Length: 83
Image: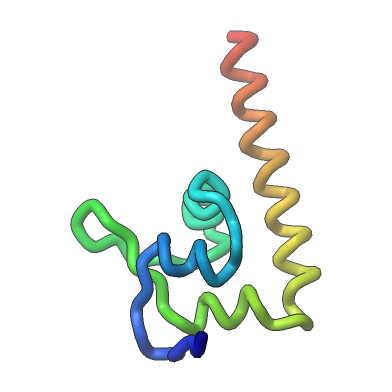
């Protein structure tokens, strides 16, 4: 599987490349870990964004950002339950 930098991919295709679940893919897009353009009701992701996620030098930074994003989501959920 070769990823072309200038091509646009659907979240489902990116999910397959990154081997993540649909909910994780959605969370990554909404938290800005992967930049995506909204086209109508769908998202499109540039190949460069996929390559950034797959680059070993950036993997650690991405993992740290992902953990932080998950903490925000769970903290928001906990606050909403207590209100």
